[in-house]
Length: 135
Image (cartoon, rainbow, N blue to C red; front, side):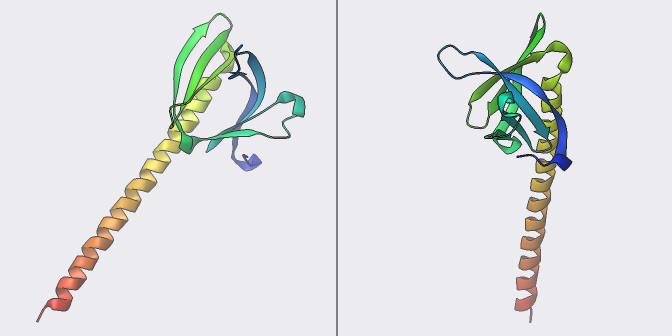
């Protein structure tokens, strides 16, 4: 779960259940720089929180505004869709999207640097082998 130092936003969202009736259930939500934690509000945020780590989230999709709610879907990397809704003025979808983009950008920069360092090490190894064979 998110540590208080990393919390971007806390509040309430409604999540559509996976059950046959697809009821909307209130969830206590903590958005951090690397995940979204969901727990039942009855537990006071305690108990078993479900954590959606940004590494497992592909995108925030299907944003639709109707009346008093904004509906949006979080699509995971394994193509699972999780539906949420929030009051229109709360802009939870924007907060989650911005945090996800920030996470993905940081990860892309780390991946690029890792590839660049690996290429430099490989080039240095090739250069060292050539020098070792030189007469």
